[in-house]
Image (cartoon, rainbow, N blue to C red):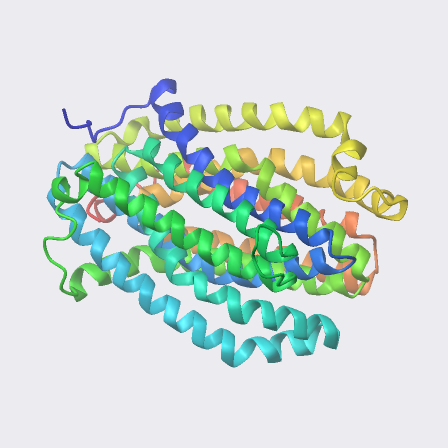
Length: 449
């Protein structure tokens, strides 16, 4: 029997979609943690360097994530409208778009990364970072295809199938990191660059496994994924128009984070190592939050496609409640065992003295994010992605102004610097919730995407 593509707003439906997505999101965050754990064993500064290169790579990876969100909205809308025969065309054209963007990202990295890092970091760190990125950037094509299949599976209510590809990527990344960084398991010892090769190979393995699962489940035939392999400008244009504001939104957000890390690097390698760990913990403890956010976008779009717009705010409220509840489960232990958690990565007294107050600030920010990002992704689900971009641009201006004043003008501690996350998520919530509550999104244009 084919799965029903129309969704309801029950708690069970929300959890059935969110739990597999959370597992899929767990994988890259787990990989980041594993990379940082192994690299921290190479000596001081390596974990911080992985933070700078990681944020740079995120600038390009979130472009794919933006396309993923745009495609996911379109696929879910078609599912809600009983137009499943059009899903295959959307998927194939998204693959073409992402491969072109991947080529652009690789060219940009080889052309501009040396200048970017040469201007903002010390020479040794610049050389180390660019060498790493020249390798790491070749994983973009595999990552993008991997992200597009996420959109297909989530948009068609098949999120449970995400688990297998992500599991394959996780296991292979851990094994390859262990082997290539330190020269274990008969592999060459490549040090810092070994993490780059490991990540690329893990992304490739994850991509292959997922495509095999899609084929084995007959989804290629059901949604006519490969019936027409020709490039279709009209469909590609629809995807790009829907996704481009989200792409810009995420790119602006990550670039602002890169700006933050550059300012942190002015305070020395210890501050950079602390902030890199905060970024990783921010992502790791936000796993369920991002899963509920993705669920919010998909389910809102599906409801609008069914003509059930009046139930959207009820749905958003339920998802936000589940998101905040899951975050509290994490928030409480972090407050009780702050030192113990940080000591797993570095038990040096100077590191702990700097990191403990920062982690407390970050923990509160994560709690704020649990509701704010659900509302922001609900705006994405309405189809009015230009509103997302406007919200992000206003918020990032406030964020950058705060960071610059606190860290450069007043030279305050990085704990105050990480307070910028409070500014960011408060702004996101106020504007997103106000837009959803206004009902202005429920118009003919948003329903017809």
